[in-house]
Length: 71
Image (cartoon, rainbow, N blue to C red; front, side, top):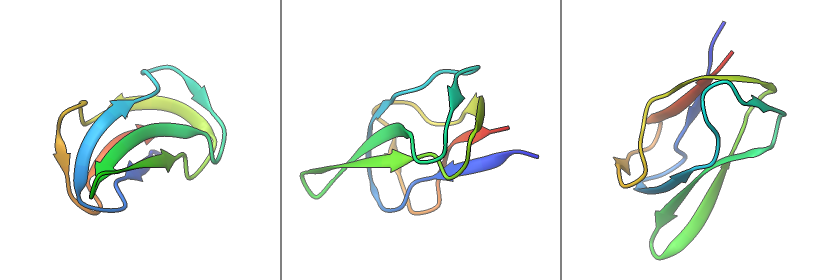
């Protein structure tokens, strides 16, 4: 079952720090967004393998936008 990794707030996606096929552990940083001139790291909610990346650097993301999925 896929686990989504969501944006916690409105912001600009600065980087996706993993690629499809990467193994991540719970609480590993997987992306960075910029919100109100602050950089906010997004962490993996669970351990798994990156299955799909759904957003790209430069995209504006909203709360609950799925950035990537883990399997």
